[in-house]
Image 1 (tube, helix red, strand yellow):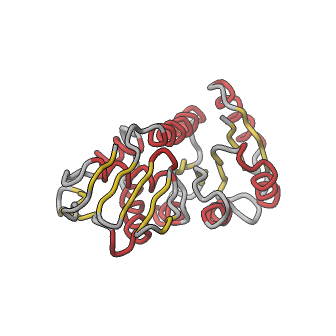
Image 2: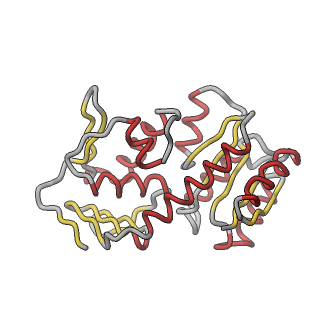
Length: 232
């Protein structure tokens, strides 16, 4: 597993690198926006996850995250490092397409665990026994991490795809934000707005075909169209 760490603070890069290497990962480092963009282009598929500092010299982490989501590898997992504590700023990062964020100052061990969680969840969905999940015009193929609406591929972030697969696998069941955070993100605790933002983004990308219902006071559920099917 190769992780790119982009941060203009050499101390942060050094500490994070040690923890990730301790977990058996290969680490590549950059210290500003231009070098990060170049590394993502040059290293290509070698990078399996990017940790981006929001406040590094322009383009910053959020700008690069947006570029990743509109580029040739929109599925690349992204974790943002931010010193911004305001919820609006955290939501901005999630809306840019980040799969997760960690607020500075942070525990390097916590970040290492978040990295492992994102990579593990990505692999779990990819290795799912379900070949194809369908409901109406929505189709998800976990083995290829491919989502389609009426036969047209839709660019989803890894977390958005994981969320879609989980909901398709559990139709008609209501899940609270806490339960989704545990089941999809693998977190025992965290900012519940993370779930809210991902639900909003997933609905927007699936368009009128989405079947995500808000069950007031309880959470969210995928309401089957009645003619959907799951193929093994």
